Each structure stands twice: as structure tokens, then as C-alpha cells.
Image 1 (cartoon, rainbow, N blue to C red):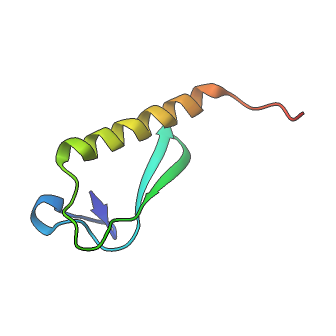
Image 2 (cartoon, one colour):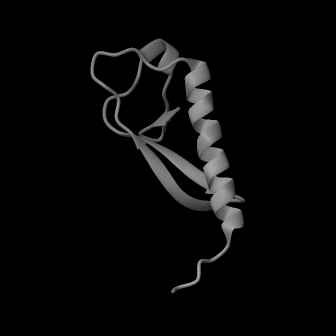
Image 3 (cartoon, helix red, strand yellow):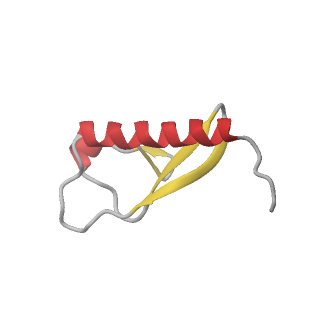
Length: 73
């Protein structure tokens, strides 16, 4: 994970404070983001849960990239 342009060791330091941005990109194009707000005093999600979140964001970005432009009604 990157926090403030620096590598953040979630396993060793826990979850960083503040919102966390998980970007959805596809084919090198930025399509949006998921904003995550950790609950104070809770443990960081497991590595497996974090990998699932990143995989879902990757799939969302890929789907948006192949969707093409929308037509105005």
C-alpha cells in the first residue's frame, strides 16, 4: 500500500489513518475510485481481503474501459 507517496507496511504498522483511495483503472485509463474509510480501533483487513478488494477494482476498471461511450437520450 502507498500512503502519502510512501510505501506503508500494513502488516507491521496497521491501517493508516484517514480515507484510503482504491483506484479503478482499465487499459491504463483512470475510470474512478473507491474511497475506503477505516473504523478507528479495528485491525487491518487480512491480506486476502485486501487482494479481493484490489481484484474487484481491477475488474470494475476493465469493465468500464470496454463499455465504450454512452449515448445521450
